[in-house]
Amino acid sequence: MRILPIPDLHLERRKLNELPPLNSPFDILVCAGDIWQSEPEKSVQSIVELASGKPAILVPGNHDYYRAGSRTNV
Image (cartoon, rainbow, N blue to C red):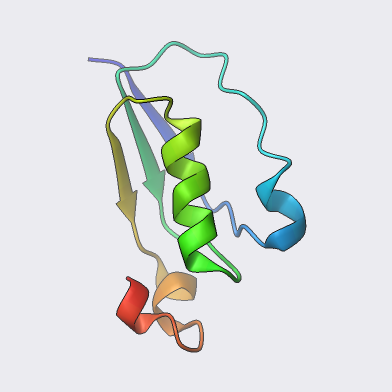
């Protein structure tokens, strides 16, 4: 199984549309912490789209948890 780890994206509005396509072959995408700066729903959707139908595991980091208003989104 090929796991593609992606740590600390800190996505925000201006970066959501700038995610590059993934050129490495993978079986599962693991986004390891600090995924969003703002707009958690759109950030998570961007990761799902980036995974292109393959499984994706999103592990919240401290920024995700402590970001104001995001605790219900974790």
